[in-house]
Image 1 (cartoon, rainbow, N blue to C red):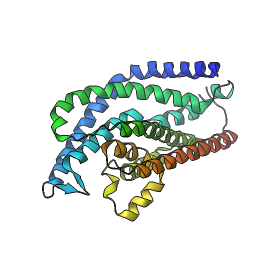
Image 2: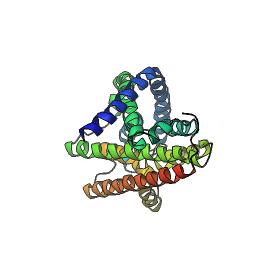
Image 3: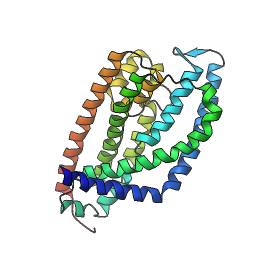
Image 4: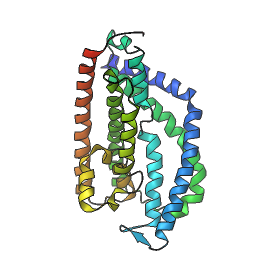
Length: 270
């Protein structure tokens, strides 16, 4: 166990060093994301101009949701892991993992975790700049039980984000170009993941359908717990169970794709 921890701990440190090299990339991305957040404020401000409440939530509650969502994107979001994995398969760089006692999934997960540490630290800068101007427009009740349940929801959200990206990267075993799959997934995620609007604004049957899919648990679910859009404890615990089931199912899919993909793989380069 200690040897395993040390092995992937070194992978984490390598990922941390690599991510620090691109810290300015994370920084620029986070600052540009503030412009997106400003557009969200303007659009929702116009929507709330004719009504004090939409879907049972106030303007402050809705803006708080999007601010939390903004932070979660840098804390648990998978940015380009799928393309990195795809590139390693195409160039034969995964050959080294086939000849050594290293689990490729855990290796990439360690790199992903390191990148999230750096991006989380970088996003604190624009948030610190923006919050003095936004605090009067936010409504965040930091109840202890919400904080306690948001943590496992966010961790599993990160696991879902990464494993989906990992699976798309493994599609390179069958397809030389995966960009189409990734773009389609991002489009679906932006709608069913609550990035365009809070999912509780959907009709009841559409919301029930969204709750079955993994996209619901990638961003919306932890954000909804923290911002009070989900208030029923039973719904939260049910969501955590479903989220955990998706983590397990995606791990199984990733394992199957890896094993079957290796049967088709022709080692070149590396």
